[in-house]
Amino acid sequence: TAAHPAYVIYTSGSTGKPKGVLVPHRGVANLLQAQTDLFDVDPESRVLQFASSSFDACVFEWLMALCHGASLHMPSPGVVLVGDALESFVSQAGITHTLLPPVVLSAMPETADLRSVRVLICGGEAMPPALVKRWAPGRRLFNAYGPTEDSVVSTVHRCDADDGAAMVPIGRGMPNHRTYVLDAQRALLPSGVPGELYVGGAGVADGYLNRPELTAERFIDNPFVPGERLYRTGDLVRRRGDGALDYLGRNDFQVKIRGYRIELGEIEATLAACSGVRDAIVVAREEAPGQKQLVAYYRPLDPQQIPSAETLRSALCDVLAEYMLPSAYVALAAWPMTLSGKIDRKALPVPEGDASRAYEAPQGDAEEAVADLWQALLGIDRIGRHDNFFELGGYSILGLRLMSATRETFGVELSLRDLFEGPTIEQMLEVIYSKVEEDTADSV
Image 1 (spheres, helix red, strand yellow):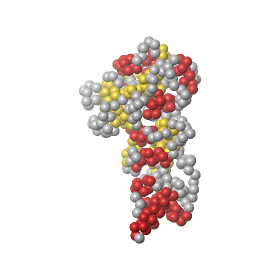
Image 2 (cartoon, helix red, strand yellow; image 1 turned 180 degrees about the vertical axis):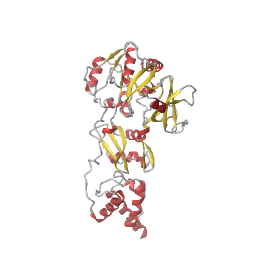
Image 3 (cartoon, helix red, strand yellow; image 1 turned 30 degrees about the vertical axis):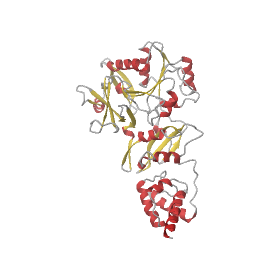
Image 4 (cartoon, one colour; image 1 turned 45 degrees about the horizontal axis):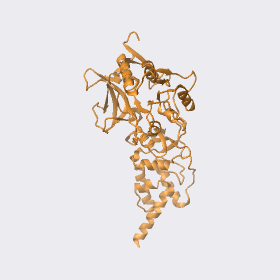
């Protein structure tokens, strides 16, 4: 670092290769002042070092403790602070301040209360509303967001257990930080419109160590403040009417399916707000070329009362467009995690269908005829009478084709709404029979 007037933090890039981030002293000093103002740190504070020394969050913990005259508490080598072990350590050390990933908080036992913690900061992943309801009472709970390239923390939001919002915002810029929501042409976007987040101000790093090409790609001149630079985060956000930011996911979490651009973060937030769901992840899987489908993974609030795929799909239908509805829903007891405490999306299991629904062959000539129509449209050899058209990969265009084929085969006019309300072969045939009865009654 002698050749650079900066503090170098090494973090892992998207390729897994280490990259040195040149964080100026002003960024560190600004972070220290913000900790004092926002998090009520004093010499009596007892700070937990939860993060690994290879993860940038550890710098936040070191500064919070050692630069405010507080004490820093570290677990013994080899001890993993998760679940009961974390609760025990916090209780014995009397921890008052800690920064934890949401996935770690959600893995705490139901009886845990972390009673000594008066300031709890969450970061590294999106914050589910259920965690706010559980952990906000009795303490100050913050949802923090920020890359290493902006001195660890860029925005912060004070959480309220009674907020009731479907999405927990990442808040507003830290002191002496500026946030911009820009489109692909780097023009400012109005409130409510998703765009990429750019950050400026005292926390922005000088670039990457010995990587001029990457520095030029991610750090740009601020078109709104002459002489200042912006860091392009690669994160999608949406500004609320009150100025707070909603986090919608990574730019590379934006997918295109059947011609529609879809923000996975928006689906995740909507699913996490469903009754009985603790938190959720949505990914786009392409198990066969050209057959990309959305898969929803979720953790239930109560392992004994797991919301069914049908229940969740019905709830999402009321809020999301049809093309944004996942084709498969997978309930998990716990998220796979990386060493840095983040959710490992690459380790999510391949869906095997709805385990609660056993295959049952179509019954009678009519159900077999409907199954033949589905097989021709979906390209699937075996379809059971209880299988869901949309979970098998069906979408609105195929639904319209199915309506046309149904008219030719049964002489009945169905609508897409009929298919949404009766998406299995058995249910669809019930709708067909009811339509036939109505037509017969009208003709008498």
